[in-house]
Length: 59
Image (cartoon, rainbow, N blue to C red; front, side, top):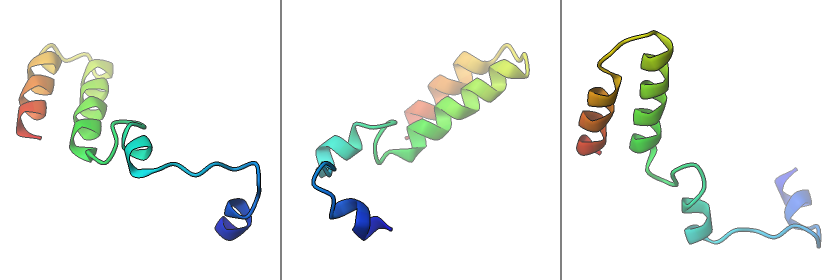
């Protein structure tokens, strides 16, 4: 299926720089930090911002 998509004339593939700018790019650590923050807020905890800052500093 991927070959069929790439063979289409109206599909433009992204280079590495463009790919890395989508959803936090290759750095899944930051993406996981943000998801943990959202989960923390949904659970109603008060330490979420501090946990997010600590998580980001470890990435």
